Each structure stands twice: as structure tokens, then as C-alpha cells.
Image (cartoon, rainbow, N blue to C red; front, side, top):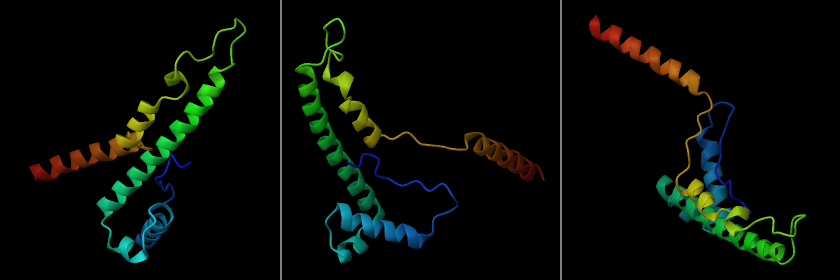
Length: 131
């Protein structure tokens, strides 16, 4: 399963050649597309296809978790004889996983550093404005 499809590159900038090769590879691997069609795909279409693939993968995971849930509920209990999970949502929160795909939270690694750069830029613009 590939819930975390999407790529982050931590060390330096990624070359356009590497990005292009990643898009081609994803197109062949996940979208079952011809190379010619992948090359004609826009970046927006690629991003939409990646999101759709991740949602399909999430649906598969939900089915697997549901099967495990049903198996678990058939006999698993705590020491008092009660089920460990009262609801399926406690075991697998499909809505939360779907939200993470459809509305991902931005991941800013160096927030303080970016804030400092923004403040310095603001000061610079103010100084240039008054000159």
C-alpha cells in the first residue's frame, strides 16, 4: 500500500531532470499510461492523478482494516471480557486519513528560519521605501 505517495527532498534543490524522471516513473508505475501520454500530461493533471491514486489506495487499506476489524471483533477482548475497540472508527479512522490526502497540512521544516527571513525582507523593503 502506498498511502504516503508524494515526495519530499530534504537535501538541496531537486533538478528538473530528476523531477521529470519521477513523473515519468510514476506515470508508468501507478497510472498505467503510455510514455507519450505521460509526457503530454500537465503538472496539474499529474498532481490530480497522484491524489486519485492515493485515494484508491486508501480505499484498499480501509477494506483491509475492515476485514481485520471484523476478525478482531469476533473474539478479541480485554481482561474484563470487553472488546478493545468499541467502534471501527477507533481502529481505523477513514475520514481522517482521507482528509490528510485531500487537504494536507503544509510541512514547514525551518519555520523559525523562514520567519526570520520574512522579517529581514520586510525591514529591507521599508528601508528601501524611505530612501
